[in-house]
Amino acid sequence: MVAYCPICGKPVYFGEKKRSLGRDYHPLCLKCQQCKRQLNPGQHAEHDEKPYCNYCYMKQFGPKGKK
Image (cartoon, rainbow, N blue to C red; front, top):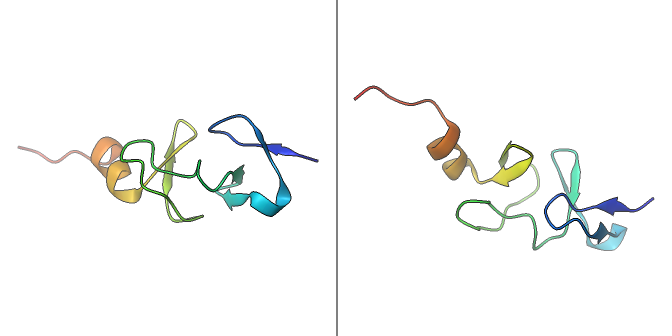
């Protein structure tokens, strides 16, 4: 069975896939949606099914402090 990349929608074949958080990605598609930094499997967060590095995730979606 062929999986499809959640970012580009194209087939991801076994020899090229990076599996992270239950999804299969192309190596170049697994990058932060904000800063575009390449991510390692399992070392990132998701929001609306899109990967973010931990820094960008906390900056955008983390708890807000009082000013």
